[in-house]
Every structure is written in C-alpha cells, then in structure tokens.
Length: 279
Image 1 (cartoon, rainbow, N blue to C red):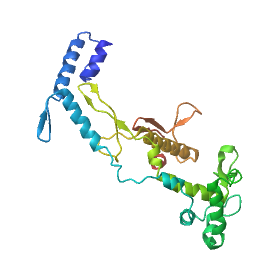
Image 2: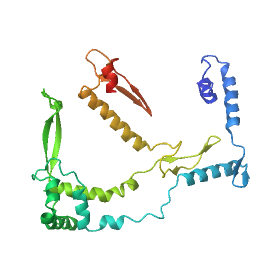
Image 3: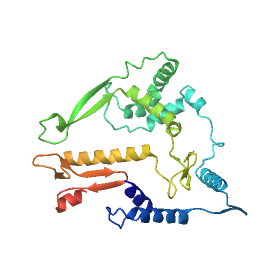
C-alpha cells in the first residue's frame, strides 16, 4: 500500500507495480515534483512576496476578486415580492403565455382571456386581489385531471400512454404571475459553486464563484446534475420510442445506451447506420 501511495504521488504511472524496491524511487520522484511545483516567490504589482503565508494570501485574494460579483447595484426584491398584483403585471403574464395550448378544466385556454381581456379583466384583477389578501381559496382552483395520450398507434400497456395534467385556466394565471416574480429571486436561492486555493499541499478557505463561467472554473454540481439528468431522460425517451437500440447485457436483458461518469459519457449501441444517425 505504501508503494502504491507514493507511486500515485510521483505520477510515474509508466512503471509496473510489484517491485518492493520502487518505493524509494517513487518517494524521490514525488519530492522532485513538489520542489518543481512549489511557488517560492510571487510578484503582485510592484511587490515581491516570498513568505508562504503571504503568497497564499495573495493567491486567495486574487481569485476571490476574480470570481466576486458586485452587489451594490442590485435593487432589493423583497418589496416587489410582497407588493399587490397590478393590472399591467397580470396582463403581461397572460399575454406572454401560449394561447393555443389545450384548455383547462374550466374549458378556457389563454387565448380566450387574451381575446376578451377588456371584458374579463375586472373579474381577473378582483380574483388576484382576493388571492393576495388570503380570501381566495387556492384549493378549489388547484384541481387537476389526467388524460392519456397515445405514444404509438398500437397502445396496449400503461407505458404506451403519456399522461397530461389539465388544470384550471385561473390557476395557470396565478402560477404564471408568481413564476415571473420568483424568476428574479431564484438565482439567490441556489448556492453557487465554491472553490479553494491549495499551495504546498495546504488547503485554504473556500470562497464563492459568483460570476459566469470562466476558463478553469468548476461547474456548480447542482447545475451539472440537472443537465446530466435531462440527458439521461432523453436517452430513455429515445429507447422507448425505438429511435435508438442499445446493447443488451443478456438475452432479453435491459438495453444499455449510455454510461455517465463525472463529465464523461460513453455511448453504446448496435453498429448500424440507423442507430448511428439516432445518436
């Protein structure tokens, strides 16, 4: 185990394991790499620093400043979130929605409210006022019905149908307005990625990465997982619709189309032109 540990530190992966005399060699290689990679001095502005603690402090300050976002220009959103619903805010949400989508349980889609806004706006504004004051029961509006849509012509099993949830048009309006309001704050509800500086095998304090993507910046783990999850579901959708054909581990076994590990993706499938086009 000692030999393997020093072999990894030395980065001398071209040697085979098993020779007990290699431990001393690996130790020398690791120390040599440490001496080469060590930062003995650092020039910042017109000053030169040679003390390890000062060098580490300069590095941390530099990257902390590089990834820091100024907040002094940002307005406070608390008042906007707690403000009563205004006519223009409600109208913007309704007219920004897709009016041609399926109607809800009440039989009205957004196109109806857009076309007859001049007639129904007073009732809608009053409903939003009651909702804001807590006098409008959201439970009666938050009712939904599932309808099934065929995924293919010869649908026999439950998985051959895609469920679609229908809700009331009024509930969709409330959700749309709240979505626009919360959109301004959602970025502050998600923790940004953090990073630390390592010098001479010493880990220093973590600092947040608040700015956009930069060269060498690690992606937020949450963001990466979200993207990988979407990619994973896309592959499953392609398998269910028979757009792709993966490799089966056994006769009649589960088909494998992809393997995800960290930021690497391995695609697996039958070797034919149709499958390649599908990928």
